[in-house]
Length: 172
Picture 1 (cartoon, rainbow, N blue to C red):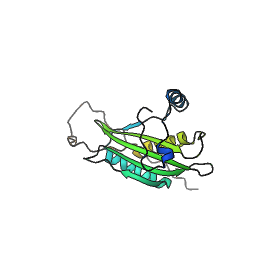
Picture 2 (picture 1 turned 90 degrees about the horizontal axis):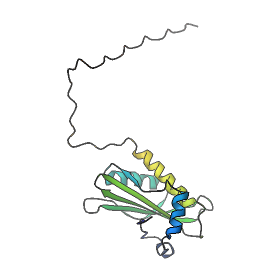
Picture 3 (picture 1 turned 180 degrees about the vertical axis):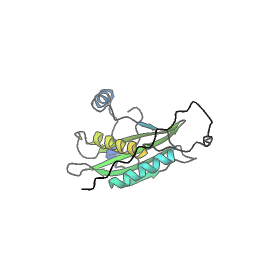
Picture 4 (picture 1 turned 90 degrees about the vertical axis):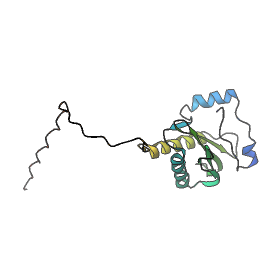
């Protein structure tokens, strides 16, 4: 909430919208405590690839994007979406930031019409992060110094359990 991703391709009515004040920020944090930036111990390019796939799978229309690379530590995807109810236009921006131990991802969603979104933006962000968490779960990057483990002759290792006997087959 202190440094949200900025919209670049959205209409002026969204780009120029002031950020919420401290009172509204506190209320949003209390109402949606899980809507916070996520950190992934992966390279920004890998995280960006997953984000790009999720944006495409949702059918969102990409309006601006820049992939993080060696020259740009910050990347983003800005897209247009629709509300669940009435299919009103929504602007979404997802920022990918390289940090010392992986990648930080934050997201912002703003409806274009109306003063209140009835929780639609928070639901969109929460669902997106849940899917991103799932898509990156178990993904590991190779360690440059990784070497295959060498077998060790260790008498203290526990023996493997015996293979169970097959169950008898019924002849009925």
